[in-house]
Length: 277
Image (cartoon, rainbow, N blue to C red; front, side, top):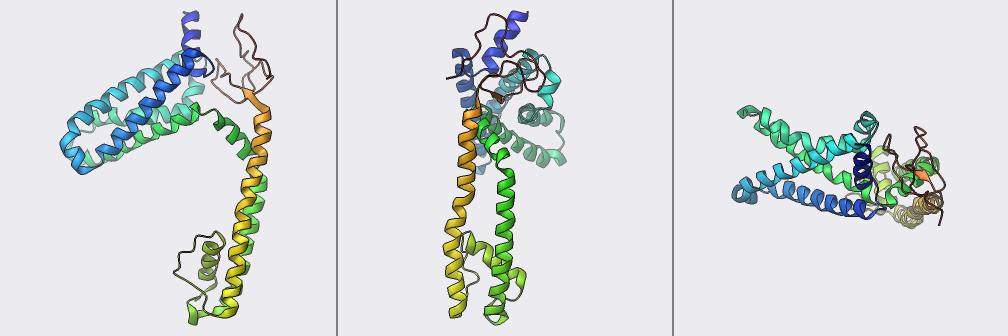
């Protein structure tokens, strides 16, 4: 039984084995097809003609995803830990609406059922786990959060200052009726969105707007540079693709042989330890 469980765990959770890669590709295809089915079912003309077949397809996908969810719980030693994890919750949300439709059968609940079925779109979030760079991006965002927070605060201060200046320059007669509305204009100008619903009419106001627009292009590059730098560092730290067989956590460093959360050995007896590149 232990050997079978280890084999299922390797196929489902490990992406660096032939079986794991094949399973990931098959699951990705099913997730995409199931989301496409949900989207098509929301189109009235398609639903009226093909609603019955889409309903059968929906149940087929639900059964397959239920089996997959059950296998994940079975092959993980700490199944409750996986059930409480982000991906465990997403997997559950992806299958329960279809089963709820069997219970809520009264006419007054039909609208509720329709809304619940939309929750199956959450299956697309499961695709994140099969993208190798997802963990690196997560680490990079976590490492750069303080820099990003300081950057956002600085931008907020700038738009308040620029909005106040524009309120003084243009005034209510040109549409800048209050400081909050002027700050709104500064936000859409600094971010280079430019809805055009509020524009400066005086020469000084137009000059200030030009300065803000030019600054906007430079400001956009700042968070990109911060995250890019952290991505390079995260790529250096993150190279071990193993998933803990006990608690299913990922994100181990290159040289790790034990889980950073529960301390479980990442490699079964006889398995080769992943060597650094």
